[in-house]
Picture 1 (cartoon, helix red, strand yellow):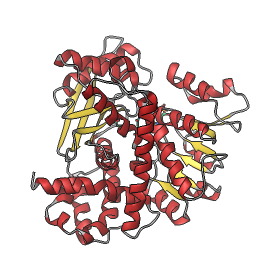
Picture 2: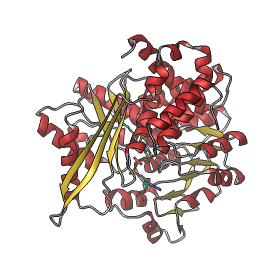
Picture 3: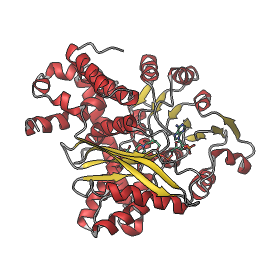
Picture 4: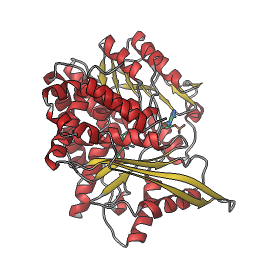
Length: 448
Ligand code: NDP
Ligand code: 2IT
């Protein structure tokens, strides 16, 4: 869809020219600019003071060589990135992704999304993202450790508890954060909350591991409640089988739903009895094996090769929790045709623009990633607070704060949509509500 406002259309053209061959970044920017068209009509000062032009340009992009030695003594060289996108409302905050598909455009799209998501949490965190094209799959712990130490040797020059606080994302979990934090501490001789998602014995927050998946369900339950529905008794299709998918499955099940699918990049499992999460945790978290192993424990379940097939399974609610653009128009139409009435995004940008249009035109409930998966980074910000106080809260306390934050995000998102005449359009609502606080801060700073 093209942008109606000529200023926005010209700005979009400039973004494409300045950032060639970065389609994911273009996609993320286009969606936000489209949502903001009514905002700049109401508040033309944002154009006059250059907020829009500044917000699409990262404050800093750091790109570096990551050399390491594999178990056979062979030198390997990967590429590392940190995009420090926007620090208007707090230190840069956002995860690190280790996946072979990572390049500058992926990190920019994620960093850009993070600005608005982090603002929506109501907590003082700016937007950033980083990562590498390193593939942790099939690597030994020692190889992962050497890679992480080399990655941090460069990254440490650019981050800090009051500057930029990375965390996990795809391919970066507790093991990687441990190696990264250990190296930072050694290099800088300081013990600060420079990373979140840390282990519980060295400054991690209780409930951070669960937070993205739990938060997704709290947000979704709120959205369902507004439409007179709930997770209770619903059949739920979940994609992915990593951190977000596992804890979304756990909470949805606790709220009375039956989760019937999970997947990885090779294929998906369908278990009509409801996913046995202990088995998934054993396969994925302990053994680091493929989801196809599940049928060895549950022969009644079916494994199908190919990950996009998961969206052809009949369900009431779909929670994409794997990766960007995993739901295209065809998958969206299959979900709608099968009677799915709510889609809520655990992954970042999992639905293509055409898929989102199909969902919105069909009138089903749609919870966009920036709002729906913000519970992870919100709890990271709670970890930062605890680290600053050198104190730790109980699981219940953090979980209660997370619930409150997700309820507020739903409320603020739906109210912003209503205020700008787009009631029920949570995509626009999330982009607008996230933008306002950042834009007002940037305006206050003048040209910086
Ligand atoms: P994990 O690495 O723990 O799990 C990722 C899962 O997604 C795996 O099952 C993986 O399968 C699958 N996957 C990854 N890439 C692809 C692909 N190209 N096609 C199909 N499946 C794929 O990551 P997370 O669970 O942390 O992250 C999942 C999503 O949630 C990402 O979009 C991330 O940005 C987002 N997110 C994460 C947050 C967090 O706190 N961790 C917070 C907010 C959003 P395989 O093993 O085969 O690669
Ligand atoms: O996409 C995300 O919000 C994350 N990967 C979590 C970021 C964080 O800093 O906790």
